[in-house]
Image (tube, rainbow over the protein chains, first blue to last red):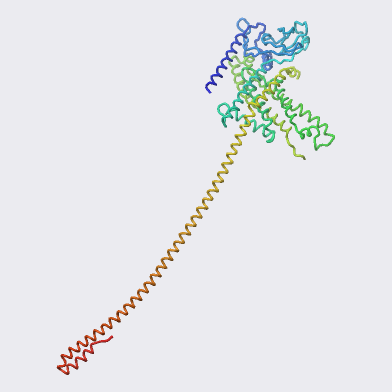
Length: 373
Length: 166
């Protein structure tokens, strides 16, 4: 036991060292970006930028007395599928540029990063040209498979969940009642099984779907909580991630729907025959579009809104500095953001619960045994 | 809506879908299946333990009832035995009493008979003695009175008058 702890401590120390060395090497100067956030529009742009996914992991940045910008963080690998195949490089190649100024030459292609997206310039072009709506006209978007900040968050949380719960699973081999951290996790597992899976899916069939529901619940909850830390993850606030979750739920309940479920969607019993095709269209739209859409938008909107509100309240420090003074603006910002953060902790759990609950409900509707009337 | 769709990254969707499916499969294999199995096993174990405890309690109750029955029976038996013994004792006492009484009566009768016979013998003896005595007296008197005729007569009559025959 003690040996194990020392081993983990060693691994942790190595990781910390690795991070620190990356930080130092990455703290290069970049005079191109002003980076100062002070006015309302700057704050707005900053917030909108920060709820988006990012190609590098930045913790903070500051400008020194010579006006040079220092970034603290580390670059992440960029993997894009271009017309010339898969291209990989580190995101540091863009030097924190997000406006399409820095060209990265790979495989004879010129790649630029524009508003968080990586574009491939058309042959021979050396600069991005824009139309009136600020859309690039001589560049095509690549399929971005990068290890972005969100992907890193998913990997990190996935690994942690796997470690935590497989260690709980291992404990049951030797004892009936888990000890240590497992004692905290076990009631949560029982909660999801007995309060979400069982009542919504039914005693007979719940077991098959509990694994999915448990994974989704802990995945969303932990990522929501990580989003509240200053690391600045916003994984569950990415439309693509919530869409992936919602599509998985859609696939599961569509694949496991029984005869009764499809009968009630396509040829609703007990209504006039003329109405049945109309109802079928509505029911199909409900089952295949509205249900997953409500799942993905609810989670995305709640988490994004939470991030925007917390960051806006922190920004009170700058925006109200002139009216309230430094101390007044800072204390107001602290008090408000403190309470909103507390509420966000609750929302983090609530959204995970609602997503899992609704998934269980949809699955339960698809596998329910109807008594024939 | 347009910004929303613009923010949607197909690459991230693809990557996160793949990672999620992998995570679900790994979690089911290494965590949820063993955990849920262990939980179910434990719950069944608890249920079984509770059931068997209830069964043991029931068994114990029937055993106690049995014991009570046995105790009752034993008590009744003892009671019966005691009663029997008492009856026997009484019977013996009464028998003995009767026997003693009859024996006593017999003995009394015998004694009375003996007394009677003794008395008869004694009376006969006395009569004999009286006769002898009377003869002796008569002799003496006759001896003395024979000297005096009158006196002789008187003596004989007096002596006879004093004697009482029973």
